[in-house]
Image 1 (cartoon, rainbow, N blue to C red):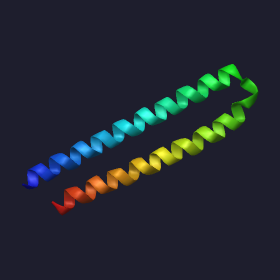
Image 2 (cartoon, one colour; image 1 turned 120 degrees about the vertical axis):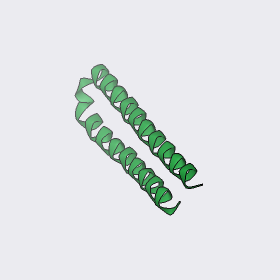
Image 3 (cartoon, rainbow, N blue to C red; image 1 turned 180 degrees about the horizontal axis):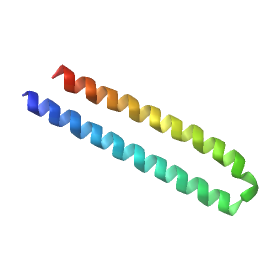
Length: 74
């Protein structure tokens, strides 16, 4: 049963990292496209992008900690 808990924690951690990577990639692509269309708004877009990336990473770190704790509790 312990091996199944470790497998679940590893799968959850992998999905967390994958989701965060896709989210930040989509965020950066959209911000670069928007700054290409409207260069004068690049400063505001950069600030908004950094805040969004920090929120995505915060959620990813939280999910990783949950997976690590689930692995240790198993």
